[in-house]
Image 1 (cartoon, rainbow, N blue to C red):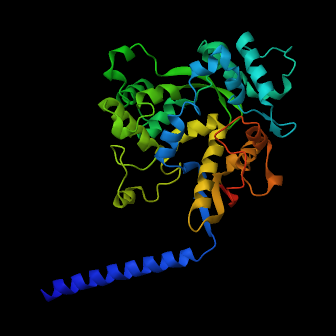
Image 2 (cartoon, rainbow, N blue to C red; image 1 turned 180 degrees about the vertical axis):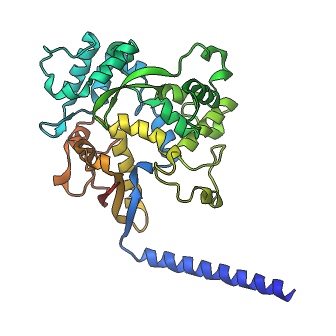
Image 3 (tube, one colour; image 1 turned 90 degrees about the horizontal axis):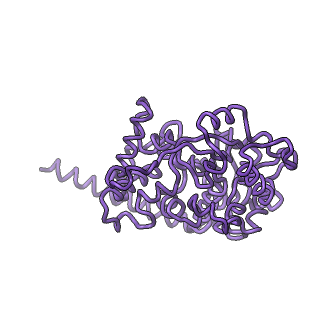
Length: 371
């Protein structure tokens, strides 16, 4: 009995000591003018609410392909079209010129020598791309996707599936998890197709087999929160997708602190690709969403108490050696002389969800190259 009472007393003393240490730490932090955040992995940041509720289910940020292609929506294709880098002048090509280029491809289905503004676009189209395009009988007019396409490979990673199975089998498992087979009217809808996409991260046109964001948005219940979804299949599908973006419980609810122990150390795409795969599809095709993520993180840092005034983001060496990636990532620098051409696109209101002013984001940030 004495031993038990001694143990209880020790636990009580330990708890009181922890509470005292926590209280002292909070008091100490409140006296600080600013904090530093070191070695933060940028591309893995943003919780499920940010990626699913703020981006994926917002048609303003991710319009459907049909919306893009309406005759009266040329301004949408112009403002949210591909971000193409001009190596000769080291800046993004004017959106009007890009709009005209893709209009030409849609009309002619190839880049002919007589196209007057061909030079900045020559490197986008490789021989391998042309062979794949012809093999799958694709055309720019019918198969170029302005909507983000989630590749089958990234869907497999995002849903935590084993990749050592035939592609058709993996597709069936994905469609089952997303509730495709629960409605008879979806039996004739092809959720996975071959698309022509622009890989803005690598600055090239690619053939991708995958699902458009609009279809995924429909399968997870559009803008309804998971607790408001009466359809079981959509609720389960949304839970799967929420878990593809953040460390949550299997039903999509918030995890307890003890649940994070199972994820300890699993925070990079090399060690735990599941939480990165679908994010990768988003900012690989839409660099403005990478800027949106950075703005979101900087806003949180600048508004916490005390604020974070200096941050070092870890970004892959491959991305940091691409000038167009640095151009985007420098958008919110305190020093205006470091701003690139992407900032001028924001000033023209091409991406209205990105604030033109950086005065609120008073965080000095740097990048660490990850190898």
